[in-house]
Amino acid sequence: MSARAPLALPVPPWSLAVTAMLSVQLGSALSVGLIDTVEPAGTAWLRLSMGAIVFLILARPPLRSLRRPDVPAILCLGIATGVMTISFLAAIERIPLGTAVAIEFLGPLTVAAARSRTARALTWPGLALLGVVLLTEPWQGAVDFAGIGFAAIAGAGWGGYILLTQHAGNRFTGIQSLSMTIPIAAVTAAIVGIPQASGHLSLGVIVAAAGLALLLPVIPFALEMLALRRMTATSFGTLMAVEPALGLLLGLLVLSQLPSIVQIVGILLVVLAGAASQPGGRRANIIHDDPVFETGLA
Image (tube, rainbow, N blue to C red; front, side, top):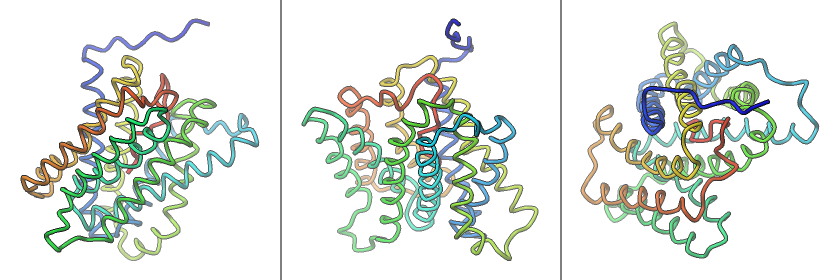
């Protein structure tokens, strides 16, 4: 059977990828209002549950195709997604969105460097870390260590998600994988999320959670899947380096989080490190023609 031809869309693929990233960051920024009502884990549980319903409608989980070695990877992938989502939402409750995205970005950047066979690749996580220091401005004496810690946990979760995605992506299509992993993530988030959300649920809260689930992960996944069929993995990975800057921009526009000049320099260092890491550490076999959504479900 011949390979499927890329969809003939009237827009360039990079615009689909940028729109997906904007959807991710807009969904994160708008989640802050829901966090105030049902707290971070409650928001994660509601958003992941709504997303799980959508993916279960789009695709039936291929449970009959599961082999015994697949089960631990699928379970860990779902758990990593749940932990990553809760941690990131807990981070943006405490620190600016752009800072949280930059810290989280250290996860996949470190994975890319560790998988590279060149010593030069280790330079880029260091450069990004310098950017994060400028973003957090510890010399100001008002560092939120809890917020930074939650963002770091989200970054570790993102790194683990990328590694686990390889196995799932080699066995199942993107939609099929998400139809299994997002429900597991929702159950993971429910352990803490249900107690946090208890007593605060209303029709308005549920509708808001459904809208946020469309912004992240449903719409970004669809757009990225289309973009990746017309872009190389390296091109896509380089473009993804812009995401911390988009987080800073959405934090300014939606949450009125005004960065200092030093923080702007910091975010530029993170973006530079992400873009420069791609030629020597491309995310081959992680992002491919029919991907599992790996750009961050937070």
